[in-house]
Image (cartoon, rainbow, N blue to C red; front, side, top):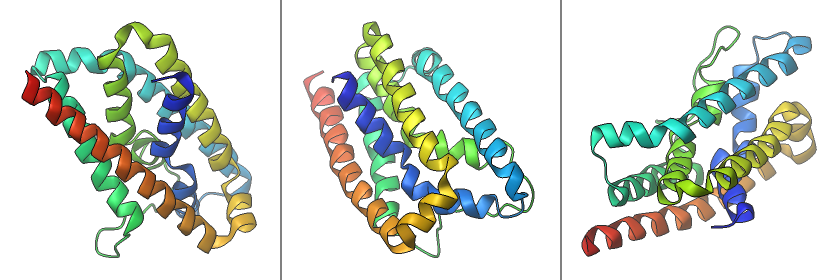
Length: 195
């Protein structure tokens, strides 16, 4: 996988357009003049978590004796479940969390930005080709920066695109992620059968 394709996959998994309504909802109790500072802080916390997991996640899996095929298949399943919820949102199991004060780490940094699908995806990249860590780190930084710009200007993005276009874009991203998730699952199963 190239730097560009890895960055695109991570950007899709980060799903910044789909997160715009969640960010705005979580920030409704925060003063408007403070919202940009809170978003920047949460984005930096999320980046720190993702970078730490990029480099230490493989060691955690080694301690737990998780194999590469199992990781790939599990990452595909997690990504598939999240993508399904993006395509078919449900009022019974909403992705949005209730926030009554200024958010700190939860839910903006984790899980909205540094969610399980992102961590699983970067872990798969790193475990398959650890020698390409510069590529994976660069892809993560590019995807994070692009997502961060969208989330930082989330009020303007919602005004510009409107709720319906945001929903349509999230569903489209979900469809692309479903295809990626199925491919990850099939790759994991194929590798497990060969072993």
